[in-house]
Amino acid sequence: MWIRKYIEINDFDIAWGLLHCCLPGDRELIVRRIQQCWRTDDLLACLSIRSGFDLLLQCSGWPPGSEIIMSGLTIPDMPRIVEKNKMVPVGVDLDPLTLTPDPQEIAALITPRTRAIVLAHLFGGWCELNPLSEIAQRHGLMLIEDCAQAYTGNSQLGDPRATVSMFSFGPIKTNTALAGSVFCVRDPQLLNRLNAQHALWSKQTRWSLARRLMKYWWIHKLSSRLGMTAIRGFHRLLGRDHDLFVAQAARGFAGGDFFARIRRRPPEPLLKMMLRKFQDFDPATVTERQNRGKRLASILDGAVAIPGGELKRHTYWVFPILVEQPAPLVTAMWQQGFDATHRCSLHVVGNRPLPQCQQILDHIVYLPFDARIPDRELDRMVQLVLRSKTAPPRWWKSKPKVPSLSQNARSTAN
Image 1 (cartoon, rainbow, N blue to C red):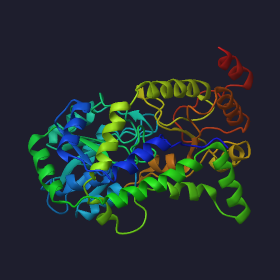
Image 2 (spheres, rainbow, N blue to C red):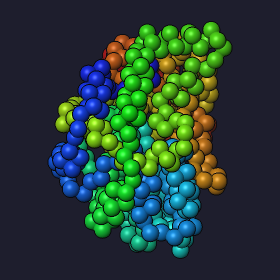
Image 3 (spheres, rainbow, N blue to C red):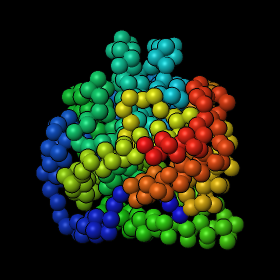
Image 4 (cartoon, one colour):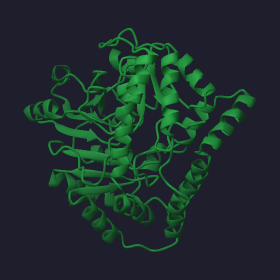
């Protein structure tokens, strides 16, 4: 079975990390070298995006009850962190074609209690920040961009109009170090406060990091075509959901006291792993993925809806589609050896109805998409999607004519 998402790490990376869990390291020197890789001193290395975001809210100086406008789709821990800091997450709906909020809707949500706008770049696409930047400047709000799913290399520091740009290097992220994050902070006073507060946090233990490395070593071993086939077969035999097992296995902060786990500084071995990954990263891997994504999108365009399909910049970190009935398509994909999933780690923010965000969650299917999958297998997967007689959701704004198989075959040949 071709799996949905590979962990971009190998045995040597994990062995190297375990070795350095036993060796000393100069923290300040490692951080300076990370800053050199990113070519900026305005940088803070954290244990995770969750850690850095929590630290940011702690250092903001905003009073209890402050409101944070957030992209209506994000991982559930982000609004949870806002609430823990006695603030209020306010979700804003997203245009499925661009995965970007309507500036007018954001303007309507601003109250005297609003302090920041947090925009998440989803699925590998880069949203246009210009309208949001103008609103943030006009109202004196902090603009924060979550770039966890859109990393392209150390030369991309995020949008300079954002006060903070957040990058993640967790298990399934591009150029993973299995943990860690980088925050580019363009307000020197804010960065000083973050550094001062961060220094008061205790470090994650080397033993905790070593256990994490071992956990993802065996997950990495199972992250193969044969391994996923075995997992699915075993869970089918027991009458269990292999899809749920895979999703839970990849969780970064499962179990225990969540806030006690994230309120830690990264240990020196993790910083070394991040530095090594930054130094060795080849941007050509992202370029190759972009080319595959563009090819897949051009063939499927019209047969299914592609969220974010109108974004001008896209890295195709994952390849989601939207169909009227996800379950039959996912089942058909499993039967043909493709580990597609309707399960999504994203969450609708707040209690206010966000119909377009909810529609995305209700109709999303993630297709297996990785350089390890041969082109002929990608073509077979495309044909399977087309033969399954799926259709874009009825609410989808753009409904071009669904191409016939003969038309698609000519397109593929060209």
